[in-house]
Length: 598
Image 1 (cartoon, rainbow, N blue to C red):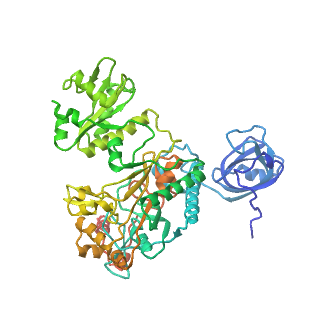
Image 2 (spheres, rainbow, N blue to C red):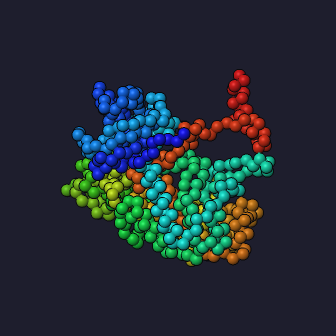
Image 3 (cartoon, rainbow, N blue to C red):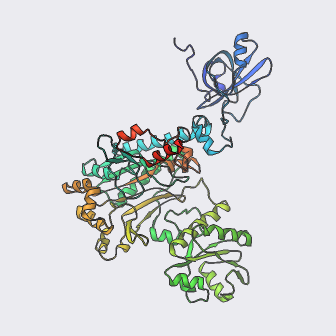
């Protein structure tokens, strides 16, 4: 038998203009309160809440049924919209209420283990365990709807620009480059394994060889790596590739896309073109290859000034190929006590720095933690490099270049945050370009691709591949917003011989390269257009634009920091029979069985 109540309105859509209308609402009971002859019941769905009133004019049986409603019961309500006597300006529906004349209870609910309200202060693991309840919260409903708006605007744009949405395989050949793969055993090919894709990189390049010309995909990717607030074992990319393009072409269409996205989703106008910084300029000025430029506090190097000083911390760092750099935090001398600076010293130590030198600029003289090694004249020379004025605080780190950049890069943003300088209504986009093609690992004694091994070197640097690979620049680019990398990409290698050379520098023999990437190299034999692309992290983009601190707030069913789904219990053990069928012997399963037997 069909439902006699057919929903006419969503709970959050009723307004004063609906007064006098008969409506049928369906949703969950937010709360129910009885005042003797009146029962007030708040009904909630994804659009909001409407207050429903049962009075003693309704049949006794209906009034009694309303009296037993409890939080999270699922109900249908029939009634007439009336003007609310005691209006609630905090609710969009606060000018009206529905006087009920009918009620259906579709299902009852036990007392929920978490409250269905945005400010319910419970542990994240409890929220994730009861995610089906957590997702009922208005904030989570908004976040998922907001993410939907981003994907919808993305599809609208790339469809209009002639991109073709093409799905690429989930079951791939393992290629041990970059992060660890998630591995899936093949039942029909014993001893063989698939890998879940870390990205569609090889397949989207194959699509360019195939003549697709412009490809995009909103695609799931997988990486078996340690987690943090903005990382999950499975994540989503806005992935794209274009043929017959150079860096300027890719950047131009991405700026056009972001302009469209922000107009549609954020109702905000952004200025293009975005500034471009070389990788080295970004590191030298901001200590980061994803700099936040909403505020100043730029790094400056004082190697030449202090290289012959008596302060061994500085001179040893320079002698060993490191740097002495600092930041002038203008007007901050009085804002940070000695105790505060000690805490900042502990902060930079988490990024590898051994300490933090400081100089307070005064009207007539400077005070400094390195004052016994530098006289007032020398301190003044240093402060002049930083354009120091009375009231300024200069903080300096000396160490390996990577540590100096990392510690000061994080320090400038930490202090800006403490000073309330991170304006979330301001959108500072920029591109970082001219990355090194390779990075050298002292530990492994070899070069690694800084982006991935299919990134093209700058054409003028190709002769350096044999002699000075450390000086080769890549045709790579990252898009950054307010200190967060939204995405990155590159112009790809399309010449088979250049691709082989790239593999050689990375220490891959021809046999290894063919074993891992043979199908790409094979495709390159048959006419490959110049091509390039980019991928955005959709989860990170949604997190940033929604004003959240963790991507778990914009993902429906995320894993926790141990890569566990608290709701479903994944991952789990499988039976011995399943393992045998897959030709696998699990030492973990044997260990578990041994523990159970003992």
